[in-house]
Image (cartoon, rainbow, N blue to C red; front, side, top):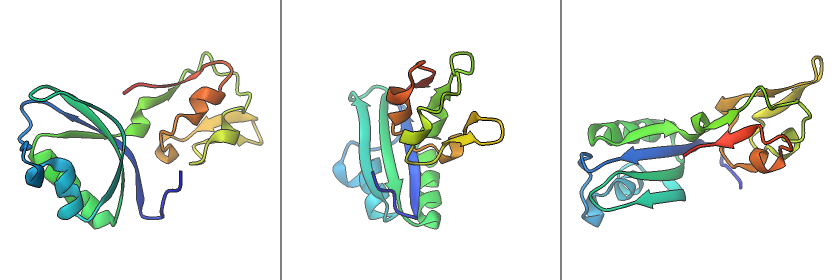
Length: 145
C-alpha cells in the first residue's frame, strides 16, 4: 500500500441504530466524507447490519483541516471513531524481540533499537496493515476489530 503524505492512518468507525446517519445515499456518512470534506477513502473492512450496530474500517486521506472537520461531523451524528492503530497490540510476554516483524512494517512502527536490540513498537506510526501479525513467529502481535 502507498500512503500519500497527507494520508491519515486507518480508522475504525463504530455506529449503532442510535447514530443519526440517514439511510439515504446522499446523506450517508461515507458519501458526506467524500462530497463535503473532500476525503478519499478505502474500505478495509465492513460489518454492517441495517438498524443495528456496525463496524466500518476506512483508510482516509486528505487535507488535515478537512479531516478534522469530518471527524467533527461524525461525532455530531453519533459515530464513534478511533485510530485503528489502537487495535494493534504487542504481547510483551510473548515477544522475544527477534525483529522478524520490523522488516515487514511499511509504516516504520516496528524498529530495532540498535543499542538495546529491543524491538520498539510505535503505535502512532502503525497503519494497521497486519503484516507484523503474519511475520511474528511468537504470535506476539494481534489486531482486534
